Amino acid sequence: MFAPMETSGTDIILDQVRRLVAIPAEAAPEGVVFYCARMLDGICAGLVSKLGQKPSPNIFSNLMTVEALRLIDNISKELAHTLRRMGNVVRHSLADASLDDVKLAIVLTRELIDWFEALEEGAQFAPARAALDAKIDPSWGVVAVVDLLSGVEAGDNAAIEALLKRRDDILASRFLASLCAEALIACGRPRDAEDLLGACAAAFGSDQRHQQLSALVLSRTGRLEEAVKAADAMLKRYPDDDETAGIAGGIYKRRWDRDPTQTGALKKAHELYRKQWEKGKRINAYLGVNAASTLVYLGDIAGARLIAAEVVAAMARRDAALQAARLSPQDGGLSAYYDEVSRAEAMLVAGDTAAARAAYDRAFSAYRQYSGTIKGAKTQAMKVAALSAAPGFAPWPVAVGITGHRPHKLNPDGLGRIAADIGGVFDAIAAQNPGRTFVCVTSLAEGADTMAAGEALKRGWGLVAPLPFPPDLYALDFAEGAPRDTFRALLAKADHFVCRPDRSDDVAGYVAASAAMLDLSDQLVAVWDGAPTDAAGGAYDTLQQALKRGMACIRIDARAEAPPAPVAA
Image (cartoon, rainbow, N blue to C red; front, side):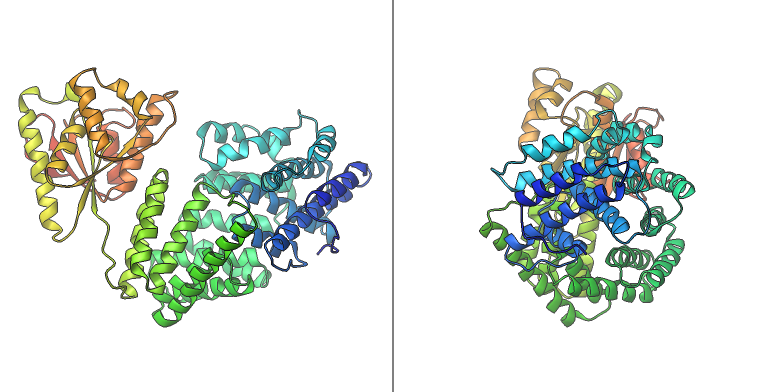
């Protein structure tokens, strides 16, 4: 804990920066880190006060409140927690700070001033920025590493590869190594994170954060038995630590997701989520909705509905407080998507099925770029609806994905049969799912895709179109005249979204659109000639990816010779 500060906002930043730049880093590195973390604490406490709440003397509590109130974006949140941990270490004399730690703390401070400046319009931060810039050498490796983290979080492969090449810079500070490992886990590269964590432990030993991230890696790589053992050990070692409890709760829930007979793991997850929800003053929607949904799975529907109603009310109060303070949420992108899905799930558990369905549909429509998470959210919603006997919560349409060849690889004399086969498969799928509605998920490429889209529209199905590039750029794939006109006509009838913003890498665009189509589909229809190829994102590659995911796949012969048939892995 830091001693209370009388100043707030801009005054905090200017005062703490003035102090930290006056300290000779070589003589007192811990002093620089201390004032960097103290500045962060003051900012968070000031924001909590601005929203009419009483700040905690605990920096973690204030930062978690700022996070729950959606006032910090994801990358700034990770930077802030890293700086907080650095402050804790020097404040409690747990370890000495190195000059590389000082460099990291100053760079993080500059980044967090930029975050706060976005919240405090009109405030004068130029003096603080100038003072920090004077202390920062642009050639420091930490500057380049921190600059890459936003791209890494977004899953940008170029940023990820550039980060991994800066291994020596990353390993200069245990805090920077943990920060980078966390970013790699977040972007779906847990094996790279594991390698980095191993090198970090060899250089610095294993501290609490290293143990937390190592447990996350075990969970994200499917080694759940090992992850559960790691979670058990951490809870014994750090029984009152909120971060440890949150990570352990997620591991226990994932263990139960894989094996529903593991009710002990589910009970542990619920107890941890509920404890954190109550300890955090019932404002963190993520914790609250997980406490409610795990109670649904445990069979306590009445108790779950009480918690869920609290979550819905807490989110409404939060939104009203932000509006009253004239503050806008800063957690765009994936964090905003999860917030909206949490609201929808809370409404569903609380029994307001109409509002829940509308909230889900808004989230799925607004954030289609996160197709990889939407299918899981739908599955969980249907599970919750079934277990809680939610009245009138209809399932989402059956989504049938399409992959196939372009015209030059389709039998020109068999186009009528290919179209008839597609229609016949669609009719068979409809017959197997009585009472359901349907959508065809297709990138609308000329050939099999557009043929399937036409057959779907004839049957009154919806169209969802993940496009590899923006429509005007994608239209260049179609010859002028009928092909391009057909594409534009189908696009006008489709709910479409763009997977890549430009055509700087065509193959990456086709691969991204293929992956998004599979993410959104329940089963796949592949119009394929039977010849394997190495074309990434093509019909054969997409079919193989679907089989690896365990999806049901039906092949339609692009040569118009063999009848439609299931494809086995």
